Image 1 (cartoon, rainbow, N blue to C red):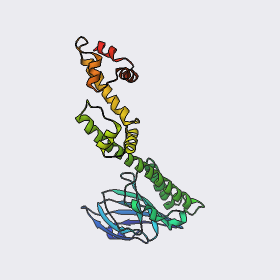
Image 2 (tube, helix red, strand yellow):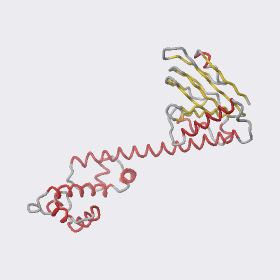
Image 3 (cartoon, rainbow, N blue to C red):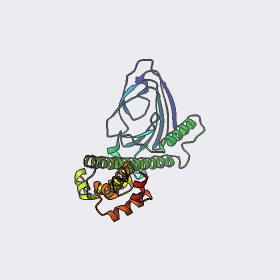
Image 4 (cartoon, rainbow, N blue to C red):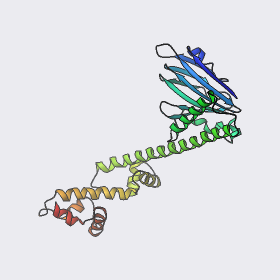
Amino acid sequence: MAIKVLEAHEVSEHRVALPGWQEQYTQMSAGHFHGRLGHAQTGAVELYEEHMNLRVEQEFHAPPDALVFSFDMSDDALYLLDGQTRNAWVTPENYREVAVVLKQPAAWKRSAAEFRQLVLQPLRSTGCRSFEDSLSGVLAGALEGHVDVDAPGFAEQIAEGCFLLLDEALDVGARRRSENQARRVVERVKEVVNDCPQDSFGVLDLAEAAGVSVRHLQQSFMRYADMPPTVWLRNRRLNAVRRDLLAADPGQVTVAEVAMRWSFWHLGRFSQSYHALFGEYPKATLKRG
């Protein structure tokens, strides 16, 4: 086990604190620099926590054949770093980072190459905050002599936790991308429907308007509204009918006139659909209006 703490008063001192890293630090905000780095190593796993009081531009390579799980404690995001990619970022003032360096990730039955497209991409999950706090506490305990990082299973537990959190973050990211894509499809459909609110569109019309396949359209609406697009559109038109009925004079307007205004041509099916959605028949709504 190797443990050390570095207090630095120049960025040039701070940048050489981590073994095996190629780094260039540039101070980017005014003031006297102060940095602190705690570092512990056991076998093929390293833990470090970095504090810097000023804004700093960092340009660096991680150690060769390493996969780094870097947790930005200011926004609870996980960043992956590897030894093949030249990395650069500008950290804010009062920056805190806690990280795990896995040497030879193949030993953990994972390959750094499979994560290369994720390097420096912010990955978030509900577990980031608790995991980074746990890592910070473990490292503090190691520096104070209360935690034995050489204990059997310690390195494996840290590595397993990192990969579990990564898988969770990837799942969250995939869901968010899928939800965003679905929302964009729905917005394109809404533009067309709002331009012609009283027209009746079929699923092929909606798919063409959105520029996607029927299957993609169906999936997007299931994610967005948990219903097919035709049901979503019918419900919108039923709501329009209800608004008109409530605003109408029962002595001047009939249900059939309002229904056909919104492209409901089969009045029996319309009445049943209206009742299923609102719990009353359209005649009752018109009377109340």
